[in-house]
Length: 396
Image (cartoon, rainbow, N blue to C red; front, side, top):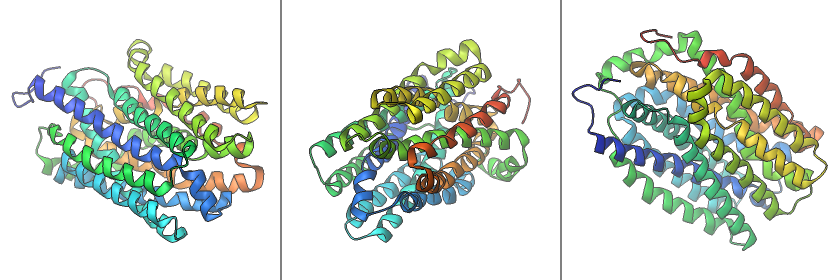
């Protein structure tokens, strides 16, 4: 790769790389900290599975609202300012949830909506910066940035399990997380590099065109399938272990941590596999791995077998989202618009997933409802060919 004369210095790129890791870790830590306390919030509010699904829908609603606007706003503000602002907004949402769940459902829904709004725009901005850094380094490291996200979720889940075991109140736990995120992330992302060398106005003019590109739309559907598999694990794995496998609350939260740890490991080793075998072969193989894990988790006769299923499920879903983001950013000039479109479609999984699993769980139990994930993973395997890298000079 030949860098332009205006390309950032190697030292600045290394600093941006570290800052990008902080952005990914921060959003993962914030989300998992909330997810680790879902069973306690559910019990406090006396929610049935279908009702919990509707409450969780608030996060997805905020994200889906933010995502279509992220492309043009990102072109104006840049990823540095957008991530800083969204980290503060997400922290405000955590504060509202931490206090509001003591009062009832409406403030929790409001706080989760702000969390989703901040998380959605933050997600697009950090992925665009990650794609920019990946190009400047001339190395396939996108999945390792997403491993940073997963590392953040593991830390959030493990700390959450400790908070549950020590009987630390949800309010104190989430307030502490909000302070950490608001203090650390905006400071770290000051080291981001500019998102592009081109005139931002030109890119804004192209943003709408990405919605008419068949490859971009199919990659969005591909990402949706893996987002559904990942998001379902995030939202429901603890509840399924507690209610379906009769594990206690601490063990249920640790099962969530095991799922996230497997996903983190898969994302860390992913670049080597992708460079050696290619996107299509690797993704189709791990789709089968995820389906096998789901079968073990849902139909396994014991909690240890369910934990083994959680490991395969987490590893099998690890690369889908980051590969979709890399595929959307294959053409650097169109990366902001395409990543925004792909993320917008993918996040529909977080909009429809919680209520779907909740309603199916009401009728068939949450554990059995998780089999719906396998259907979308099969679809993802069928359309995986669309994430094949674009030949040089080819547009979508």
